[in-house]
Length: 443
Image (cartoon, rainbow, N blue to C red; front, top):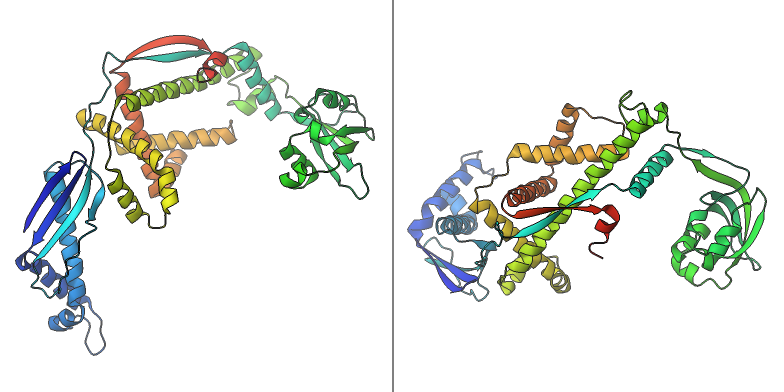
C-alpha cells in the first residue's frame, strides 16, 4: 500500500492511495466469512452457508465496500499523521475514470481532492484594546420595566369612559352598501393619526365615531381588524368607517403590594416598594451586563474578521457542499456561500485559539450551559417558578439527546471559552454609558 499527497497550492491538494491485492484481500476474506456465518439463505442451515457461495453471490459487493472502507480509514489516518488541516472531506477527483474488474486481483489507485485551511496569524494580543461598556440603568428604563411588570400582573376592568391606551370592543362598518362590517377589538395605542386617536378618547358604550381607517392604522392592523388579507386591505376602495362602541376594556396595573411582590419573587423575599425597585434595578443591570458582553464579543469578532486575510478553496468547497447536500440548488448554494465562508473563517480563528492554548470544552460545561438556557426559558414564561437542580438536570439530559441541540450547545460552550480566554489576553477599557446612548452606538 502506498499513500501520498501532493500540494497544488496553499489551499488545494490531492491524496493518492495505491492498493495491491495483498493490501485488501485479508479484510475482504474476513468480511466474506463473517457474512457466511450470519447469512440466512434458502437451502442452507443458518450459519452453514459455504464461503464460496457467498463469494460468488456477494463477493464483488463485499469487495467494493471493504476497499472503500480501507481507503477511507487510510486517508483519515494519513491526514491525522501528517497534521493536515483540511476543510470539509476528501472528494474523489472529478476526472477519475479508471475502470476495474473487481475480481480480487485488481491493483487499485484512487485520487482524492482536499481543501486546506489557509495559513494566518491570530490577531489578538495585549496590544489590542477593546471597550467594555458599563451600562447604567437610567430612570426611564427602570420605570418602563416596572410598568411592564405591573401590566403583566394587572387585571382587566370595564370603565364607562374611554382613555388613551384602552381597547375598544366595537363594531366597524364600512360606509358603503353591503360594505364590510366587523365586530372586533380596537387598540387605541395603535392609532397613528393624532386627531383620530383623540376622537377615540372620552367615548361611552353605544357612542359612534366616523374615521378614515387607512389614516388610523397600518395595513397589517387593518387586515387584522377587518379579517381580510393585507392585499385586500391595501386595495380598499372606501376607507371611511363608523366605529360603534360595545364595551371598553382597560388593563389596570397591579398595585405595588406584597401580593404582587410574591407573584414575582419567593414569598416574603420582597415586602416593600424600595426592595422591589432594588430587585428590578438588579435584574435590569444583569440584562445590561449581558448586552455589554454581547457587544464586546461582537467587537472582538469584527476585529478578528477584519484583521485576518484568508483565501479559501472555493470551487472545492462548493463541490463538497453539493456532495453533502444533494438537495440544495445552485441558486441556493450561491446565495448562502458568502455567509458560509464567514462562518468558516471565524470557526478557523476559534479553532486556532483553542489548539494553540490547549483549551478544552468539558461535558460538565455543556450540561451547565444547557441548564442555564432551560432555566432562562422557564423564568421567561413564569418568573415565580423555581425549578430544582434535579429537574434542570433531567431537562438538560433530554435536550442533549438531540444531536443537533448537543452540537449547538457544544459550539456555544466553545465560543464562550474562547471569549473568556481572549478577555485575559486583550486590553479592556471600561466605559460608563447610559442605556439609550448604548442602543444608539450602531446607529
